[in-house]
Picture (tube, helix red, strand yellow):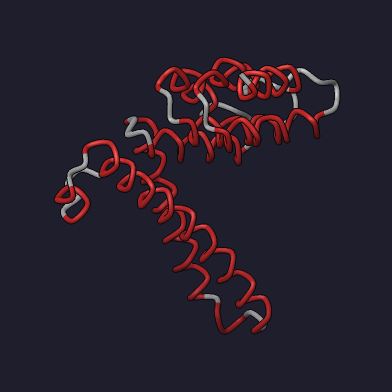
Length: 170
C-alpha cells in the first residue's frame, strides 16, 4: 500500500508546473521500476521540457514494460538529440528493431568521431584531445552498458547461462 501511495504521488508530480519536479518524478519512477508508472511516463515523453522527456525515456527502460514501446518509438522523432538517443538506447535494450538500427548508427558515429579525432590529434592541444577522448569513452561506456544490461536481463528472464556465455542475437 505504501508503494502504491508513492507511485500515485510521483505520477501526480509528473504534472507539476515545475520542470525540475517533473524530471525528478520521472527518475524516481524509473528507480522504483514499477509498471504502474508506465502510462504516466509515456505521457511525460510529450512534456515541453527536454529533461523530463529524457528522464521519462530512461525510466521506461528501467521498468522494461512493452507498453512503453510505442511512446519510445515516437520519441525517436523528438527535436532533442538526447531524448532521441535515450529512446533509441532503451528500445535497443528491449530488443526493438528501431532501437537496434539507431544503436548501430550511434556506434558508427562514435567510431567516425574517434577516427576524426585521431587524425586531428597533432593539431589539438593535449588537454583538448584528452577531453574529447574522455567524452568518447563515456559515450562508448554507455553503449556497452546498455548491451551488457540487455544480456543480463536475458539471462535473468530465461535462467539460461549459455545465453550469457554465447549471446547470439543480443
